[in-house]
Image (cartoon, rainbow, N blue to C red; front, side, top):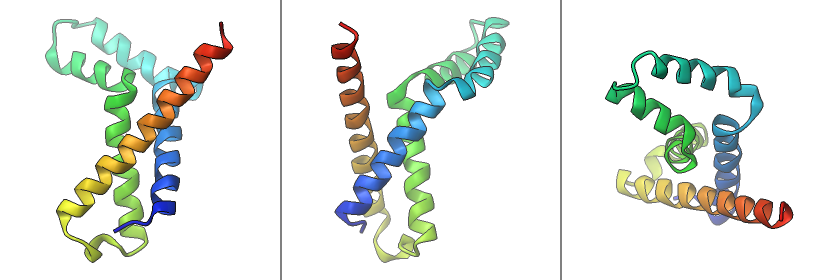
Length: 114
């Protein structure tokens, strides 16, 4: 099982990676390409789901946090140290903490922009 400091670091990494994927300008060309792809067939459920995924911090954050956690567990040799259900709970914890950071960021941004 991951420790509290590991959880905090993984949550910060998940938050930042989610911001990169959903908001940062460096990936804007990729997002525009997906939006163009969707606009050519807007009734497609698959295309709509992909657009929803890449524009939602909660959706994208869930998968990014899972990928970061899995990478950490494999790289640190902790994958076999706990049952899969424990790693599932860790995934919820990392994703939840990352979303909490996102909410704090959004709230502070709204306060500053008033």
